[in-house]
Length: 385
View 1 (cartoon, helix red, strand yellow):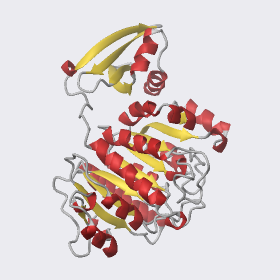
View 2: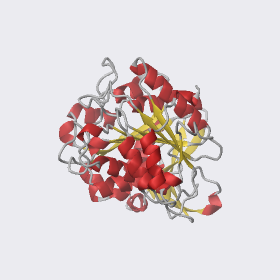
View 3: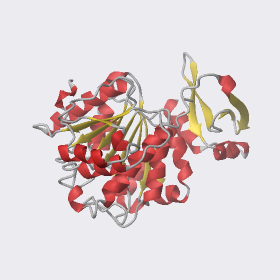
View 4: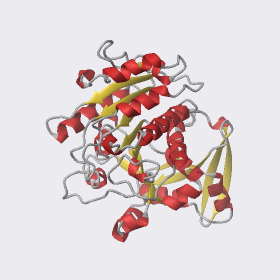
């Protein structure tokens, strides 16, 4: 699909950059404007895209209608010591039908990912996660999806797709490329026990709000294994991010959601990143727009600190630890470059045996030494075998 479908950034927002410091992001991002047209894609690493689609966003009509405040606040922030070339491609307009918007987003994301450009998606309902997932259909790979949300948004397969039912479509519909799903920040009282049990049965990973808030470092290995990340700003507490008609009192604080965004950026594997359900008509003094701009800043910051450790370049760059535990042996690898850890899971069938590496923590290594098989190892082993 041609990128010509994309609408340029609003003239007033572009003009705002003239008032900014030469060190600001607004002076260093190449912006799709009416005057200059679409930017060239050569040597680009990151691309910002807005999506003006709200028709399947449950009880949050108007989300994605005005993304200018996010852009203005992002443009005003200062660059870090970064190497990445960033472009703002403007907005995907609403299609005649919702499916038209999904198709346009899917095709554009596929084209960007094939060029090794990481898209940063803003605006619209979280049902757009489905279109993002479908962008990987032509890339011939399995997909690990990490969602930051207080609900699982499972719904059921018979329902029309919406911001509260897109996950069942991802899990069940063919082609089924999903290998792992992880949820960060769910609140138990918003999810039925049946849904919690189902995700456990599927060996997916779920982390309650309290678990993540008390130790945000547990997010790092989850993000390190993710291909795509979807954040519902409803996972952030209302006092921090009021611009969502479904905002609730409990949720992540601003500094925690920014740390989560940075972990997503620093992951060598994350190839698309989306922030959804922003509704400007509920924003108070652009508070949510400022926070989303800072989340994007932290994602970009993380991207610029990627260490390119995935996949392994050479095992000589790692120390190997062999740990006998119960009736098996787990091989752990520690990076000499970043001190991050991986563990090896073996996949076997009647014809061959194959080893795969999954991210883990030092605590997982210590658990194995104490004869406790790490939960992430078990979940991966059961999915593979």
